[in-house]
Length: 490
Image 1 (cartoon, rainbow, N blue to C red):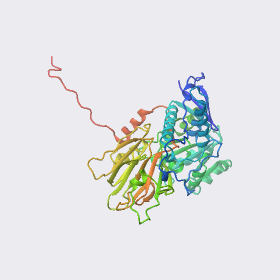
Image 2: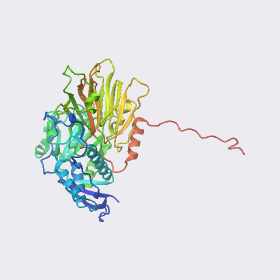
Image 3: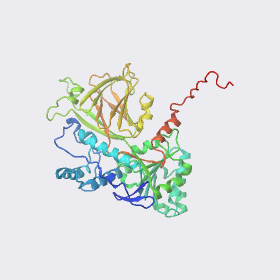
Image 4: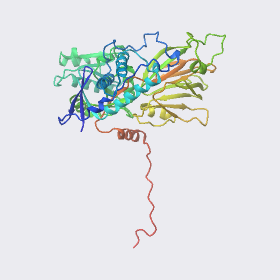
């Protein structure tokens, strides 16, 4: 029996099963995520608690007392409200839930959470993802975001066809369509020719740019990508915090993440808007660059290990943030243009992990396990696993092996003060940033997972099928059985 949920204006209403019967699984929604802000919890490193002084990258939270615009967080909030008043909660616990409700609406980086808060957040998103895999969400879609490869003439033509179909008055809803602003004057897209077909199209055909995605991500109800996995990664990059549900049509090379055939795009979109969608929440990482504030002091010998896990003098902050990114695939810290190998140090929460002498280190999400992590010899990982994959790139040792860590930790990758050269960090293959000696990157589970629309059928076997299809995983000729002596003789 399949359950359908109608989602609109931050509320989730249980409509019952498809056959019209009453819902039998409301008890499942009594288990809610709540990040309890406990002042008694052990705090993290002071230099990781410094607020951003650069508003250009600081995450802007919702107004206090208002609901978040992230549809994932709205679902979590719905779960929390359903739990409120549960008999297992004491009066103090219920009061803490109210307190956390106000706090979660404010801008909080996941690296600033205590161990308990980070664990609660990760577990809550994990439980929600499991529930979303067994239900269909009926979204009230009005504004649709279209993303394609703006330099591919074939895909531009297909994007125009899709926009024309969505704008048509034959649709039950008069959709507002956003396409990339570079297509406005593109001859292949021919926006003016499209508008000339119907003057009403001019008010409903709009254009997006990076700034609009960054400042008003809540403007879009649904996103559609035409391309390959790289196009979908670009969608994740555009929406650093709030992400609308993303449906991806496979028009690229491999297609680990693009699950739908464009030849059926009209039927696929019609069914998605009418009957609902199944969503897979993909873990994303939040990565923050931390710059050393003590390297310029010449009268003291500096030690990154001591600064990150040792005692820090009062009002003597050693590092400050200098940029934060949300990524879907991986963070790579490598040697960059330097001819020699890089030297990095890894920290897990407030403990020193190891030093790495290699071309670099790849820290991947489960989704990114089939990307650079795979090329570097890392493990393949099912996307539903709540883990952080750490793989050295051409390590200068015979004993370093890839490691898999829980997503409830804060990982730090730093360049020691005595390193011969700088290292360079990239985030989903973008924003190449230099890490000078003494700098480091914090990596933790993001509060904003990526909502990937999935086909109704499939699930875990779909992932196995994708790696078998694209990578020929475990593909070999089957071993022949023994033929017993005398078999076949009369």
